[in-house]
Amino acid sequence: MFTQINYEGSIADQYLTLSKQLDALLTGETNQIANLSNASALLNQFLTNINWVGFYLLQDNELVLGPFQGLPACVRIPIGRGVCGRAVATRETVVVKDVHDFPGHIACDAASQSEIVIPLMKQGEIIGVLDIDSPIVNRFTEEDRSGLEEFVKTLLNHL
Image (tube, rainbow, N blue to C red):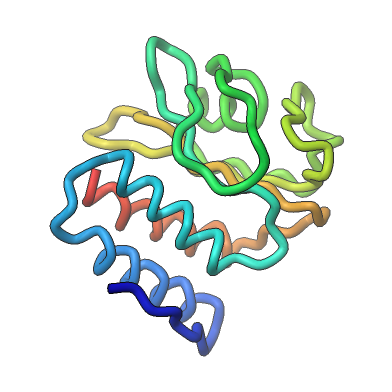
């Protein structure tokens, strides 16, 4: 069913291939947890120099840990706290070059140095976030932001 793909071309081309692969992987499946699990596994396989990738889902006005790849993580994050909480509060992607310079950063893994969080918005409402951490300062570029936002758009078609 699933085979490893060699991602070639520009970073934008690689992200396009990744989103197409996600769409093919999730087509026909309606279970949200299964689809988020496969999405986090696919990103973990594709992205280099990361130490955590996964989802937090909005429940009762707080973010609750969802499917992920990496070390155990914080289970609940209040809206507005940390990078994930800020992404929900602002409804925008948040890229943090150095988490030690981010006021209120929640350190679930001491190895994390940079982070990107993309809000998951369905029909105008936040349903959660995609959170990715790296042990390298300034890991996430504008190309990563753009590619991951497209990945999330593809994912949302299956949630």
